[in-house]
Image 1 (cartoon, rainbow, N blue to C red):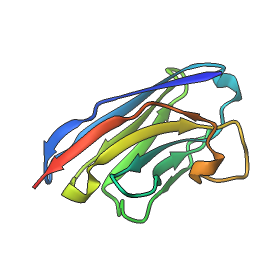
Image 2 (cartoon, rainbow, N blue to C red; image 1 turned 120 degrees about the vertical axis):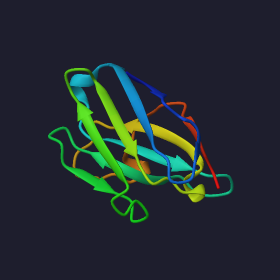
Image 3 (cartoon, rainbow, N blue to C red; image 1 turned 60 degrees about the vertical axis):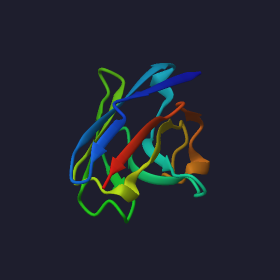
Image 4 (cartoon, rainbow, N blue to C red; image 1 turned 90 degrees about the horizontal axis):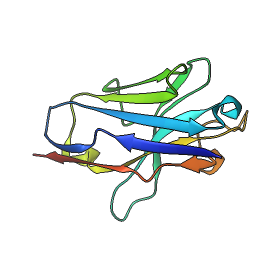
Length: 123
């Protein structure tokens, strides 16, 4: 089993920045892809950013250079640096991980999920 705990969410004004952290524990040796996802009220959960075990990253189209995902395997922690935040970025942000290979970062490929951290961007 793998446990994921997110932190770093909060209230920020438009144009501001936040850094989310995801602390992982458990059988991390089996984990390959990890990612950040978000879900706004009434919307489907979507990929924000994903990263492989060797550091290759992918981003949702809406990110457009504003966010950066990084991974510290020694600390079992994944980060999401979010800059130039917009009100439409308001959502619950979830960390996820999977042992699977070759399935990309689709939410359905993720096996383990954190409980989420709320990000609210005011206009």
